[in-house]
Amino acid sequence: MSLTVTKKDEARQAAAKLFCEQGYHATSVRDIAERIGIQGGSLYSHFASKDELLWAVVSDAADRFFASLRPVAEADAPILNKLRKAVIAHIEVVTNDLDAAAVYIVEWRHLGDERRQEVTKLRDEYEALWRDMVEQGIRDRVLAATDAASVSRFILSSLNYLFTWYRPDGPMTAEEVGSMMADYILDGIKRRTV
Amino acid sequence: MSLTVTKKDEARQAAAKLFCEQGYHATSVRDIAERIGIQGGSLYSHFASKDELLWAVVSDAADRFFASLRPVAEADAPILNKLRKAVIAHIEVVTNDLDAAAVYIVEWRHLGDERRQEVTKLRDEYEALWRDMVEQGIRDRVLAATDAASVSRFILSSLNYLFTWYRPDGPMTAEEVGSMMADYILDGIKRRTV
DNA sequence: CCTACCGATCGGTAGG
DNA sequence: CCTACCGATCGGTAGG
Image 1 (spheres, rainbow over the protein chains, first blue to last red):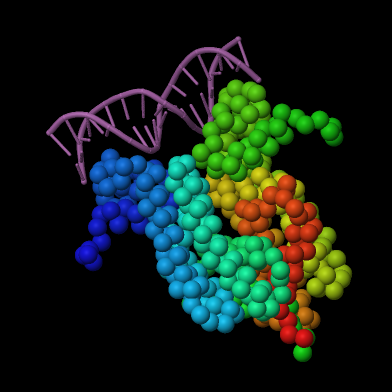
Image 2 (image 1 turned 90 degrees about the horizontal axis):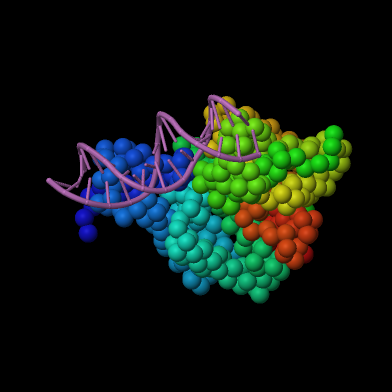
């Protein structure tokens, strides 16, 4: 329960940064070790394999996506409010740690078989949280679309690509970006005739 | 001008498939060679380097995106029609060759410096085609949004993520998916009050 | 297009 | 956490 950043945490963060910048297979364990000032072999006192390092980054990110979305999804509120809050919740996770988000979205597929399947399961569960909200919106006749699965994928597509262009030192805060994206997703970009 | 599929074409397609499935750095030149029934070293009679193989896949895909979008972007038509056609044009390129599209979208960043910068330039030009259409829509007071850059990125985010879930053997044709996506993007998912 | 090979680098380990 | 090392594999080349 200490607030100290352990060497293991340092390694995970360094891995996230390098996996994000160069990709998993273009990053050597020696690259990661060098970034935190130790020798390549010394990493193996914290992680059993390179795969386990990737897993540390990916599973950590997955946890944060769930922790952010679940309270919103389970809240009892008008569905449009929930969807708007859900968009902002997702985007906050992405913007809080762009490196980890990028690795979670792009590099997870380089995990070994077992862990890759575990991530597939987690992604399905996460998508199901969205799909449930969309289905509620369709039932309540608040959403126009009828295909909850394709709507969910549409939403997540917009959100997941965010890490490619969002820059934290840019002009917009995470919440501003989230609000804008929610407008686009819910209302579309076409002007509504009066 | 022959219609024969040359060994070089075969190699490019095999590379697209393997780069898509495993990623650039997880694919060896021997993997690619094996797929077309030659030895690893023999690839170098067609390509000077592995980087050049990746470039063949990426630049080919870029060409097809431009060839598909440009006639739409330059047409003289109501902007909503153009945007709808543009969405479909983009999606047709993605669905016609999912492997190449995935490599263009995900693996291009593993190109060497010079070619990576060339791709960055091409992507900026492609995005500019979209931004010009969006700006026209804003000028014509047909679009509600005001920030053409973020709208363009929103559109392309939805479209670029398509390759992760679209399956050609699924129930929808490329045009049906394109039409659906255009509805979502232009009108949003919220029901319009009557 | 093949055979045979090169140096470099990789993930990972033993022993301390 | 380091030193020193392992076998395996990599991209690429020479010579035919």
